[in-house]
Amino acid sequence: MVYFGRVKHKPSFKIEKELVKKGYTVIGVDEVGCGCLAGPVVAAAVHLPLNSRIGGINDSKLLKAEKREELFERLTKLGVRFAVGAASPQEIDKLNIRRATLLAMQRAINAFVEVGASARESFIVSPSFFALVDAWTVPGIEIPQRGIIHGDRIVKSIAAASIIAKVVRDRLMLLWDAEYEGYFFAKHKGYGTELHRAVLKKLGQTPIHRKTFLKGTIELK
Image (tube, rainbow, N blue to C red; front, side, top):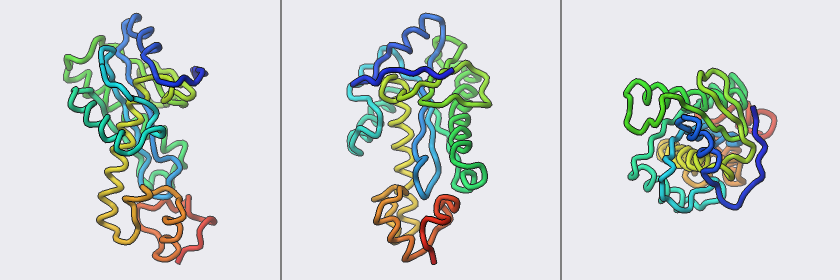
């Protein structure tokens, strides 16, 4: 089921509250990195308690990097529970980006549910989980879900997931920036900027580049 919502100025807990009343523990799910030329696609599954008092949570694309880092630190210090899943550049080339994105989301959701259910963590309000997913519905999960168009701008849990996924992915790109000197991954984070494309033409691709994204679009060495 895909829920078509009207985009609001700020995400809210409206949909989460409806599901909590029905006895669910709600997980917000989002991904980042679909359009990149390099690096994985990363997804996060997040349980954001309704009594959270963290202002500024929004679609990560609408926030500056410094704000995302600040919110990430606040979320982790508050003890917000989350799991991260990823699909590698090799998996993206093998599966295509849509299927790889769904795989990353599936991994994040299943990891969250598996750890939470097995540990019987105190954060679990109910043993019944419900996933609210940005735009998609995810195959291969055993819990009910709802895909919400523009979910990262409507649903607070999804917005929190977008922030966590973005910060995690950006930090991975910083690590690869140190490993692959001269590619400037710290600046463009793998996206197809003019700088990134110029470097590709000069130096060629690395093992973290998506070959299917480069084929026919960039004249490589």
